[in-house]
Length: 455
Ligand code: EPU
Image (cartoon, rainbow, N blue to C red; front, side, top):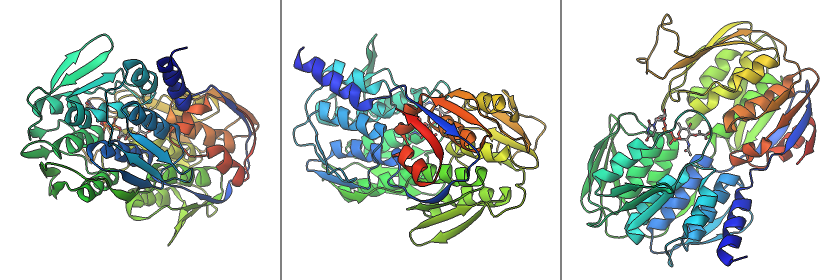
């Protein structure tokens, strides 16, 4: 076996989305305290940012999740040394960046969308970037046209091949004038990571302004970047000649916090989520309260609980920040199956993010998905052509079932559904959940869930 094959294999094992299962006896409230750490959707991008520096970076509160493993493998393939102290602190040293073997990158990239964000940093460091076909959750087409258009605007040349996409920048990268067709999180990050070292100024309009993006901007500022966030989703980036390593504690994972909050509500439990903060969860907290959930904000976290009495239905639209996140609707829908009346959830960010409701219906939920949205309901934001709506009539008791998890957030909602259901459920493919939920089996155990894990 050649060392390349070994490396590729090691990398693939690190990603390790094994097809394992959990058998859950439902009906027991989840109670107790868990801790959450840095956001998957920040930590992985912060790791990529380390590639831009001349000196090592230190990232703290990094969760032990497989997406971090993917990015670690990719950085190592490019010669970045990544030291993990085993307790959430990574030291990333980019002083020996080199070209990677395609097989190594390909073996890793299959399970994540982060590799596309390597383009700008690699073009700056190596003059070339090779991006294999991208993975990530199966939640629609998830195209990369905004990314490629932005990179072209900086002067990159995009060559498409059967392996993936190869980018070169024969004349280096220059500041650009870019308006995104939609405030895409990934495309905004692409522009930030590319513009900081590009020659001249970049103006980005219709940018995403999610808290994870603000945290990435804070990291880039620590590194020496000059980035101004202006009103109305406009960001100006003045290119600088070089960047230094950073020392940063990652923003907490608000998606994980919202998921455990919904688990507390759906199971009629009481969960203290250590590390959760109010500010980034305000929109979620409003809906949580409207549904009938209760919460107490503490210095070191938030207690989420079911205060007794019936849950109430809501109408909610997913949206870009500061709207209700698309990643929050799946766990919440399980709680909405217990609310008395008709709830409506509009998904406006992705075109295919209600697939997970099939399993809930099989478990007894009354959910109708309208694939083209609902025209009749008055809307706060204009309709997007890809909008869908789920109408949930409750309360409906759920019963145990055999479920195969389709994606990260839908998968977590299946776990919650199984925990609330009467009887036993067998949930397979739970490895997907380790992409974004740190040590979730241990956490279920801590919270008193009744299950057998057959990993
Ligand atoms: N889009 C395009 N073209 C592009 C890029 C995006 O049409 O080139 C569309 C998408 O298809 C989608 C919309 O724009 O309809 C928004 O996508 P966005 O680019 O904002 O999403 P993303 O960057 O791919 C990140 C998170 C997602 C989260 C979304 C929205 C990461 C790794 N992923 O995805 O998180 O749902 O932003 O906030 O940061 C998850 O954590 O489970 C997850 C899917």
